[in-house]
Image (cartoon, rainbow, N blue to C red):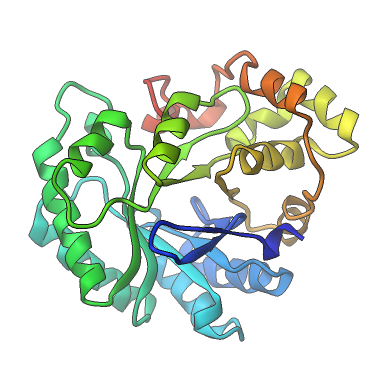
Length: 289
């Protein structure tokens, strides 16, 4: 069962292959979503300062009835925080807001503030300062795993050139028709675990006839095919949902996509329209990851 499967990170800590993403789950509904996910066997719960639901997620973690040590709780330093002090303060605020003694994972949400995403200014020096805050938080026992999100190869090289602890993870937009295999391969070479957010392309993959046809071949839903695809790429899948039925279905992916079909899915024509989500920087058509 996929919910029992894990990857081992560079520091020896294990992370589930499948987790629950909580983007766009309202704070007052987040605790219930966590409860339902944990009941179904999920152990990785992913949130962020920018999601505005850390309080609710924390409540769900504290009251779900499963020992804290069995859960892997992840959050992200807001993309706009680019100084040591602001990042360090935000980590403490996240812990206080969530009511937790430690986080299993804390990552930099983006190499640039969202309003400047993928623009000319790269924030290399600023990201080194934020990384120092994460390293210090880890050394203090506040965080077990530190990493990044939406970082390209040169963003990673910048940190790797001057760090005490290498990033353990890089969480990126990754789904059928949007697979930067060069970045995924680079991360593997550096022993950085890739995590795939929006593996169902924020629902747009469900509208794609080619994906539907391939899913039918395997007797699964399009969503299940998408989740299995990113897992077979060796990444952590983080589909977002508050629907228990979808959580259950998303975890029912114990099938294998053939090597030939994996190649077809990797090279599938890019989904160019993310509908209502085109307004968000990560879906804007700028080069991502």
